[in-house]
Amino acid sequence: MIIKQLGAQHISKASILLTHSFIKNEPMAAFLRIPEDAFYRYCYLTLVKAVEQQMSFVAIEGEHLAAVVLGRKATVPFLNKEEIKKVCPELDPIITLFEEIEKKATSCLGPDTLVLDMGASHSDFTGQGLVQQLEKRVVEQGQSQGYNKVAMICTNEASKHIFRKLFPATVASGISYKEFVYQGQAVFSEIEQDTSCELLFAKLDDVQK
Image (cartoon, rainbow, N blue to C red):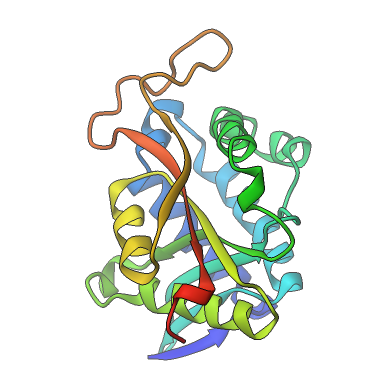
């Protein structure tokens, strides 16, 4: 397995991997019926911006892209809300949820904070800890550039578990799926396997390099 920094040559395969993983595994996706082609376009544009920030990594086995994790500056989102709505308007409830969570944790999202964004591994490589390895690599890259904090919006228990294994995490903010209201509707109230979306945060000074 080879780990490389995300480059333009990886964008297409990484977009497919992120799209398939989201549609299959993300609890919110089932309730929003997000079109796969629209989400692919969103991933593609996001990955273009991720390449520019040079803080994302992929795992490659032969000709296969096995996993990808995106990292970014907390103060520089890959795409703004209007850009996302143009390419995939069905994502707006999720983006709104994320915005509300981030507003409650602004003190944790300054210029010295690295954000772990989207990540996924191919089903053929499940159980190998590739996402965890890539998240560590993203953080190492961030530390080399002077970042001393890391944050991640975790939408399910699996992502929370990985973050807590890697870092001395605290919950900076969170919203219960049952309590979140979008345009007058509790759009995620029927999600049962996960209870809340949380922004987890850690100081990298407390992490052994």
